[in-house]
Image (tube, rainbow, N blue to C red; front, side, top):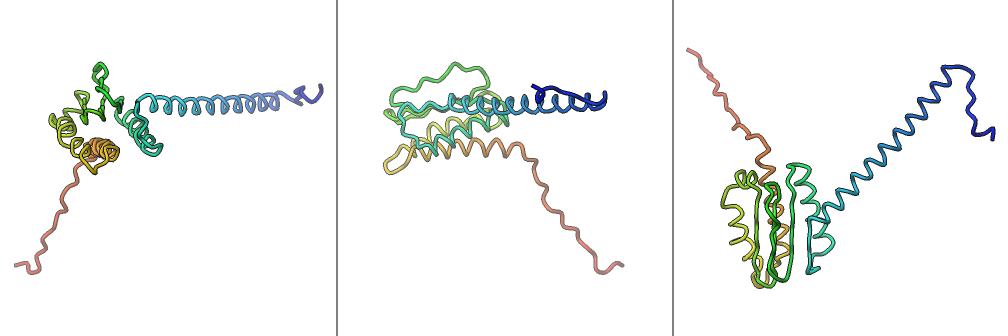
Length: 180
């Protein structure tokens, strides 16, 4: 048992050993904390995507889940994406949930934006996605999966464009060659 006993030659060495032990314990706690955060994000992203038809590939599911995570991290907005055969059932609105539902049998889309996002993107943005964008991608020879990913990219790009400051036009200084 002598291997587990802590013997120090002085008070300073004893305090250094205690500090080292506390540092290792702290690093273990931080490691578990970060791992738990990552797992919770992955679970939340899976919860935000409901593909009852199982027609989205793993890559497409990953892209949708990345969108859900990015929206939550960047803007604090919860996103729900629902793909069904029957009628789409939007969740109760809470003012911070973006909902995008696709009915494959009815070839319809329901897009509900939270009030702040709707004001930022424009009042007609959700209607244009539901009435123009998705009907086009539900058409013959088109891919609704691609339309879904394009719609999510469009939402993310429009929100990101609002965060970038407008760039000033380059100013051209006129130089006078001949001063009177």
